[in-house]
Image (cartoon, rainbow, N blue to C red; front, side, top):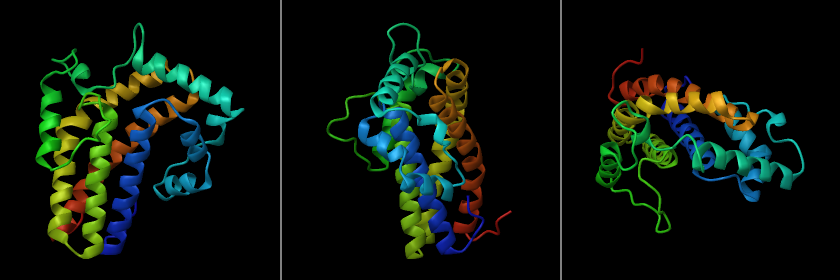
Length: 223
């Protein structure tokens, strides 16, 4: 991400971070739709990802639309839904003392979301610790951070960053790398393998970058 520590530079960085979290949340939320496929192939999305230092190779989505959509839907179901053995996209299943849906971590995530004043969409019927929900939460926090930098509200930016760091440390960093590693091991299509690698690399980078931006927001010198 950007090394620019000015308010404008930090705002751009936060907006890029929010966009990338949102992109990853959309990928993991459900199978790729026709509309989302068009977005994935669009110059606009590629520009957004490029601004964030990410390259989405053209070869990942080559082929006729209906064929690509069918193959991605089959892969998504096999990876994350079942029937049979699959990789549950829920935090509570992946922690050492977990293994079950609606574990203690699920309740913790739900309380975290509620404490921040966020609300689930009316049509949401999933489980609160689904990876797409956790990534979407981080997208919203980064969006609020960006808005705070734009307004010169450094205290508000610091608050958003502190929540990002807490959620990264207490949740995402504890389970998403292992989740993504399993996807890389078993996925048959390059698209989901590359997205899993991207997710791991991004979270690793962002875990460090959050602290840098937080020090600036609190008036400390970035290291």
